[in-house]
Image (cartoon, rainbow over all chains, first blue to last red; front, side, top):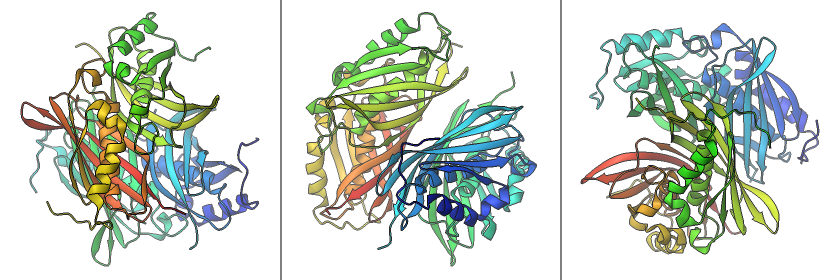
Length: 147
Length: 147
Length: 147
Length: 147
């Protein structure tokens, strides 16, 4: 897939992958990195019975975990090699119960600045082979530079 | 501690506790229910190395998990016995890195309606015996009634 | 333009237009209703020197005024004839200074329920004939029914 | 009233007042600056019939206008003399209809950094002499420094 963004770091895929591997929580919940393109990152999560809220749906905090990282790595993929990424805030809207055999969070950059990035992510549930949009997120990220 | 709210269900503590126990994700991450009062709920979480993002701080999604449930159960504690609770959206602001030996999310109701509730939660990190505010959340919850 | 949504009220255009005319603040700031389709509404606003913040850009509250109404009327266009619309919350991200000769807020429905709607709007500034995205909003709306 | 914050600019009151006067939209809607302390700013707005939405309540965008500026000037009051202030995002929750003879937005800083500030504001409606909380806002502001 083509992208409107040019990465400032040619090694952006390796950097995103390496940082994702350092997020130990992803192993705990069973999430894995999907496609990584400039300004667009997917994170996949199979359903598990130990990830749910009181009604058996994926807990909104677990949805947030993969959606926040999808937003963050979408931004990180566009940052120069010396920058680190930091989430400063996000908002999630839960459109439908997060029910399905697996989930994918798709994060995309909306604004790419030197310091401030805005990303959006969508969470899709795979239910009987159909992707259903179950949540949306918008988040603000910062690039931190060495002094 | 006194409260400005009157619970509509005298068994609100047992109901919150029972619902919390059904959130399997809480056992996965090691969270436990703290104080439960009308319109105010605490959730506690010890630090663990398998809950972190790439810099070793609690992942914002895990912070969200306990803060969202603190918001939700604060609202649920005020709902009548026949109602279920549903988060429809929340926003989190990350004020400082979530570093510390343990964390507590304190959720409080700001608006208590028949259908719509607004709750806020704060996340404190216990760092060398001092509580530091590291994140704030505001969320909108709905009470769902049987038809 | 086609739409994925079917209006539940065949008079949705007249209803949106009539409600918009009752928003006196729109006349005060010089805003007018643009295209109205099922689940999609535009509001237009020429730049004026009495609508600005300290640096001469459109004040974020004025951007919010037309973006919130664009979100709300996008939802209202899908509601049945007996329902009223109420904003319960929204979030705005300011991506770039709101500078330009005129502005258009485009609101679209993301989730259409019986009671709860989620809409998004984008604000474009017309600067030298080019549309530039300067802000995004996501909001939650409720349909209120007579008892 | 005492404050937990120390202003980095002794002329913070004059600076806030001067910047507020440059926000022409405040004159258009009839808003005025109230108390200004380090990290806390009030903005007052009498009700007017030309500021309303379709049901006669203050439009959420006008509420946002004074709440955003209250957040922003609360942060600005703590910034050093060479910094400018910029809102990057905010979220508003509408807790009750904004009905009353007059309104006051009270903005307070929650996090004061070198670059990133988080402020909250509350909107009170004066209805028959009683202050009623009708909306809450949380916003992220940036301090911009000359290069």
